[in-house]
Length: 429
Image 1 (cartoon, rainbow, N blue to C red):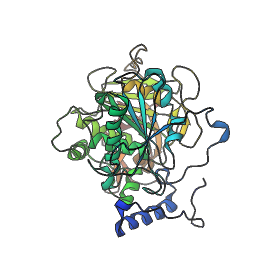
Image 2 (tube, rainbow, N blue to C red):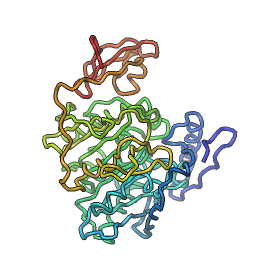
Image 3 (tube, rainbow, N blue to C red):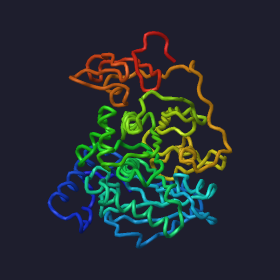
Image 4 (cartoon, helix red, strand yellow):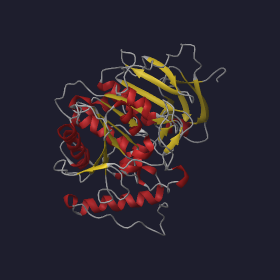
């Protein structure tokens, strides 16, 4: 599908009966207008799949009907391994904009590990009737609150998996890409008692957007709030819930031009505060041949309450590593599945679904060289390395004044420890 242009506008989406009225039509029109102006991938069509990259013999998903009242008008599919054990875990997978459940299944690599380790994958799918570009409505209050809309439909899918497939309700997990990643944040906040853990890929903190305009601001440059404010948004989603809270893994590409990388730091701030942790990592390590940087928060090695994985050299998408090796998975059959590292392998391990036969990655020594970035103040803010107040930029963590917030003032910032930035004064790798 080509990108929508003003000369070839997309047809208006069919109205959902439960969302009639002038406000709904206003939001749809505004979404279309902003899409045309920005071309942002959370709300725009992806390019056509490359025919030579589509995985061969992709297994068709099983469609499930009558899984509940379905107030969000979603479609449920499952991938069921041939020998699914009783009391198996379940992973809910949420696709990105313009994608489908089948595209996400074919490219993300999740089914590889479901077959290897024996868990059910539930693929939720939205439609153009819900959102013109098939995005989960992570920014629309009627779909993000407990007991309402799309969030309630996904909850019903988990419940149905228990009754229909015998999955263990204590071993439910959720993950998603982009708009699906933002919707993963919704599910963890609205239904913390349902999910043991979640993995947000190129997503956004819960409670950031409440309409289309604020959603785009959340995407880029991102919202800068205190950890306490972010945590309160989660607690307000299910008042009275005292825990235990879901564990959360956060994956983000360093070069994401659609959802600013600072969202990974804001997500970290949100969920570390929910868990009563500080924002300084307990452990750091590197993963895979591309040296993805992992930061863990929490007292137990290998079972961190919060984990942040920053993938170098990639933009907006799910990191995959096509191949048949034990740490490889996925395909680059469509846009937003990027050859790098098999994130689904590491997410499966984070969920505790892969056993303990493979040792955890070694912890990096304290002498590991600090990471450095040279960029304008505008880019530092956009990437989450700095914040802006009163027209000036300030290094995140240290609070150093970088000067005017614009594209003309440039600094080299050093990150050490993770999430703490200072102006580099000496040699910097």
